[in-house]
Image (cartoon, rainbow, N blue to C red; front, side):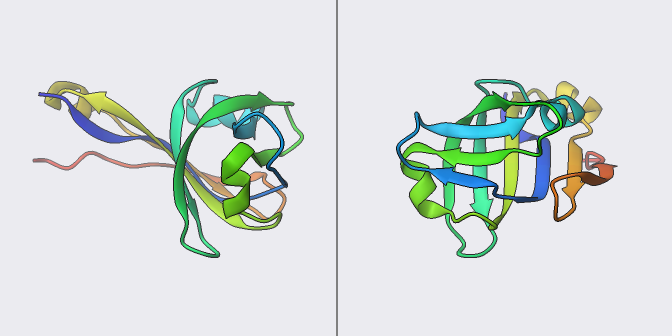
Length: 125
């Protein structure tokens, strides 16, 4: 059986732009993608910490080192520049894969620099 479990997360990233007229997606700094293991075109769930909105989209690669967290297309109506977001990437895994999975979690600062890298441990069950 496959279960949908957390693969990686970017926690408290600051929205740098909301572009409703742009092709839909979320643009994320390439360095952040590499640090947490997310990839271009991966589906992600986004939670807006200001208003509680949640939505799903896919990833575009941003310029390395720019700190980009840009929400594009229709989803841009759900965020404002400066909103703090939680970006969650899930993967389908067997129980065996789950036992080896230690999601990478980036805790961000106000300028979208990684303040801390955490790993979540799987439960025994």
